[in-house]
Amino acid sequence: MFTYIIRAVAGPKPDFPVLRSLKNRNYRLFFVGQGVSLVGTWMQQIAMSWLVYRLTGSALLLGVVGFSGQLPSFLLAPVAGVLADRWNRHRVIVITQTLSMLQAFCLAALVLTRSVTIWHIIPLSIFLGCVNAFDITTRQAFVVEMLEKKEDLGNAIALNSSLVNGARIIGPSVAGILIAAVGEGVCFLLNGISYMAVIAALLMMKIRKPVMPARAKNGFMRELHEGFSFAFGFAPIKSILLLLALVSFMGVPYQVLMPIFAGSILGGGPHTLGFLMGASGLGALGGAVFLASRKGSPRLGKTTPMAAAIFGLGLMVFSRSRLLWLSLPVISIAGFGMMVQMASSNMVLQSIVDDRRRGRVMSLFTMAFMGMAPFGSLAAGGLANRIGAPSTLLASGFCCVAGSLVFSSRLPSLKKELAPVYERRGVV
Image (cartoon, rainbow, N blue to C red; front, top):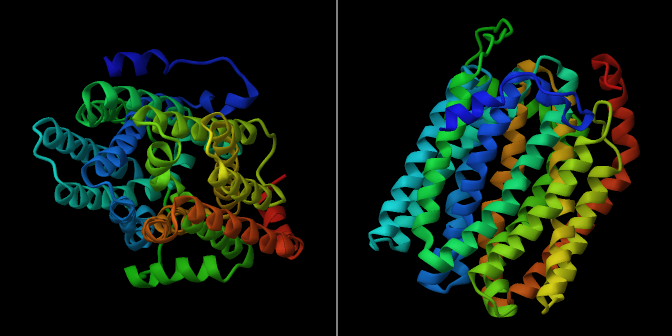
């Protein structure tokens, strides 16, 4: 069924500027397959957080599960970046998606047989985190290989973000209904089935063998060192990564505290959690569409720090709200800011890095965005146990705003340093 649906959308499509990267057949296949899979992924994420909260009632263990699932991205992303510059990226993604499918089926079996405990959840989260470290890094570097024109790269990144957040609207809402009706196990089962769509799409692609640059006889560690030296020796890349790491550490872990806001603060249940996460996804979808509609190649400007400030302010207001009708639009605004800051950072990095180093630089992007989140999840869970979830989120939002102000103060010098790079690469 998945193969039939995907084949139906593989033909030529009409030209709409905001959807221009969908003219590329391979990217269109990926877009459809990934769209199905991501709905399942968000369903699993919501089901996982609610399952942990139901089993333990502990904010700290919510943080521990988030930490264990995301820590591998911090530890393994640099290794994955070197390998993404060496290996066949298409083949790697097929393998990682298959392993993720098996993890979802394992969780479903444990929950549906009522044998699941927190000590099953943590190692399975670690396993998925290890898979994601390679999947996310390689997928970021693989986007350019799915496109016939590199001019479509920024649009493809923005559309991919819109896909993630379109699924973020549907997945949590469906998960909330299913959890209340039949329990978390069905969410894990449906997620496992959804992976078949993206695997089918990947297998249907016609990927030209990438032209890899001639390599000196460098060892693995030397290439790893070269990637770090290049990224952190160039102030614009370093500044983008540091702001992203700050926002990821301080702000993104708000998601692990959402069950507490849904249940204890707003007095709801799993459906409330689904609505909150769906509203956040709606705002993020708006942010992705906003970026996709912009013309020309992405350049570093005020968008990135302003988005970080919007995200921080949204979290601060949300932390004070005790009314669902107010919390929903506020968390939507926060979602808009988070997505624009993350996606614009991705777009700028990919526009200034050459293909030879793309895997390693995008591994540092993964390390900053996904890798710092587990430390933030653990810190947020521990701090929420001491001072409460609202005060924790208020402090998190304040730090995001402060980071955006520091970045803005350095923006003129960063743009000046980037000018010759843009001219050399023809970015207009």
